[in-house]
Length: 305
Length: 103
Image 1 (cartoon, chains in turn yellow, green):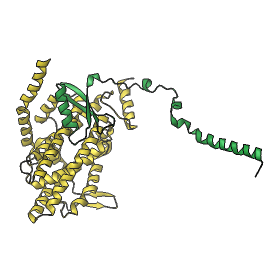
Image 2 (cartoon, helix red, strand yellow; image 1 turned 180 degrees about the vertical axis):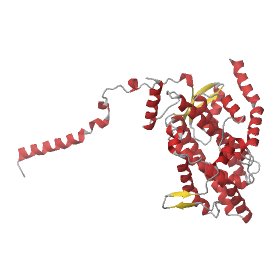
Image 3 (cartoon, chains in turn orange, blue; image 1 turned 180 degrees about the horizontal axis):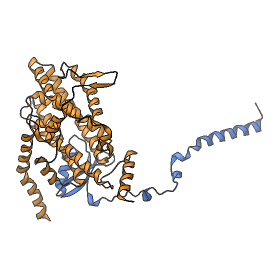
């Protein structure tokens, strides 16, 4: 069989719903796309720990402090799971981190923004993690089985993040006017990034990750599902979504909304977001500061050998 | 650094299930990483760590599922017993009619 014939047979198997394991043969393009896609996801988990990290010391109660700390530990744990997949696909961890801190690889748009108040912590945990669970839920059926299995585990853990975030928001909405305003202002800051979260409405036939079965649902479908799940929940607690055009069109059976500026999204994920440089320089600093730990661990092994 | 495959038993008596892997320089570190990554919420009753190079993988379906009919090993192949019971019952009924006549 020629290489092209093998690729065609592989694509056919994927279309039939067969799954690929790490040790199976796979086309170079499939491997390259998996690495890029999962690495971006892993980077997002790692970078996603940073905005919330700032709030551990400012959490309003011991319970909240423990829960925020646990969430951050989960996010870093998710990054570990996903980086293992990327390593198994052939990209070494040193190269992954080097590419990340030098801006050669991406992480999700929502982690390029600063946080201003405890309101942001609640909105992030509830609505950003909510958006992530919608896309990760679809990824459970990815053609790459190790990724699908990892998504099942991650979604299970994210359930706590969502519920904790929702609890933070609900608690504030039952509180003083100032507390309610904190949540409303945070929602207004996060709505645009949330509408960008699932990416531009690329036609499914042009989305290569869909073609390879790495993703299972088109971007726009994920955004529609997100709106169907969350708009009512947001509105019924008295929060106002800052988009006058947002409404459900029952004739078309879909949500209409103000089209996000997709050029802006591109600029943000390529390192030009309001907090991109600060976050990356902090990650670079931690990488440098922890270099001695990695050296010590590897050094011990060298002595023992 | 070595890759260790991690297996987890979620409750006493349940099977060990493969949950993923960790990279670690030695056994002790591998155990710590596996605990931190695969059991943060009382999920593990027991963990097994196996060096990846010790795992023997077989995927050849000609070896695992040779094209020979093996349905005779399966309970499902013996569903005919229901029909056979019906036939035996009928046989006895007919026999009874022969011996005692129509009643």
